[in-house]
Length: 242
Image 1 (cartoon, helix red, strand yellow):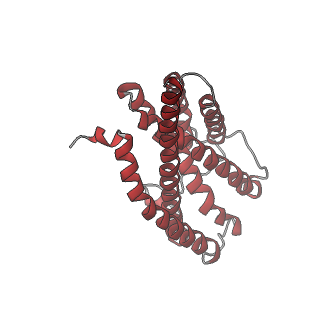
Image 2 (image 1 turned 135 degrees about the horizontal axis):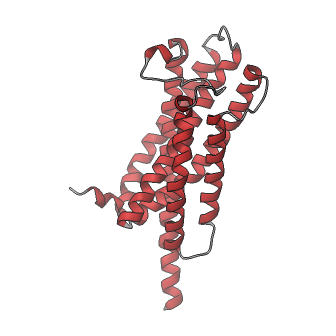
Image 3 (image 1 turned 180 degrees about the horizontal axis):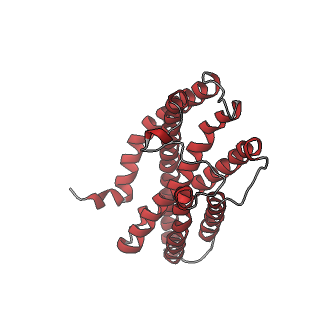
């Protein structure tokens, strides 16, 4: 059984149509449980007070924002090597989701940072690289609005995605590279000593799982829409030539 058969548009539509209801239900359940538990049934932190509860929005959105770019990178590499249209449509569809998650992470980070640092923004290595990633998202999306040939846009967008991956990596690991930054260390880590307290950890994990399901749900919906638009464009082109 070849993996590449799943890049066939018709096969993708069939599988995604089957998965979509389940992911939609999981999204509603997990996000509802995670946010209600986190905001209403966890105590204030002894240092951060009630502001710590923004973690249930900030951390999941930041993780999705960064890792969405890696999903786009995989789709772009597959396009450049194998020329599978579904893979590049997945990348194209993921970009607006990543952009929105980046905005949510920047806004919630600013709200969280003000009482902690005394300012809404600091030119911290992680924050700076994350802001640059935001502009790469804007550039990637803007590139797709061009009226140039679809394959040429896909090539240019894929190359831009490769370059932007540097800042996605920096956004993820800047805390490890530069210890002098204001940004706190990872809230989740393989090192148990670095993790947040269990009282915050469990609802945070549920929130992250909910945001992940939300990403998959939106990605399936958007990709299915892009495939339909591409198929409609082909039909209209054939009619014009006919």
